[in-house]
Length: 184
Image (cartoon, rainbow, N blue to C red; front, side):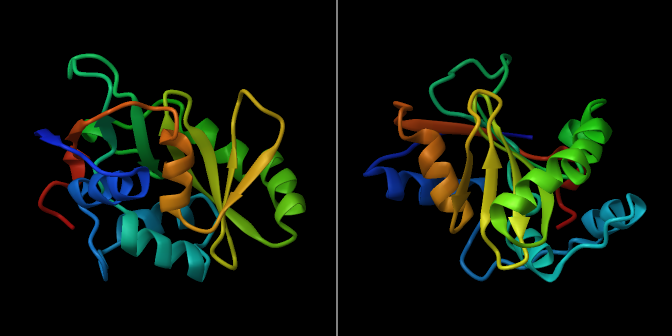
């Protein structure tokens, strides 16, 4: 389902909060994450407690955000894609490869940088979204295809602020995860 374009204003921190609220987040949000838990278990990766807490807050939020991009038939300029990718009810054919790589060869690099156990959560970002992992202490680690450094964020809001610091926008339209509409 497409959510109509609404005005977004204020400083960047305020804009990010407005975007998250429009995407479906609210303070104290706790949703059913059984779909995600089954996905992780089926891949031999039981969810850590911090992963579960993160998913209860953010699973099922609108996955495609149109900020500077005004044409809804084009690709969204911002992705909030958590595993499993259920975009429009069709599994992304690259999802399995992403999850495998982010749980395997790339995980060791992230855990070394973090100094603790981590799990992949998906892709979040503007145009070239970051691959994102969560640590057992709840920090987010982001790896970008265009830079060597791994960045650490205290929460998803800080990650989104980093992503949008160069983006000029004053409104947003979004697409929901249609497979989850009315289910969480």
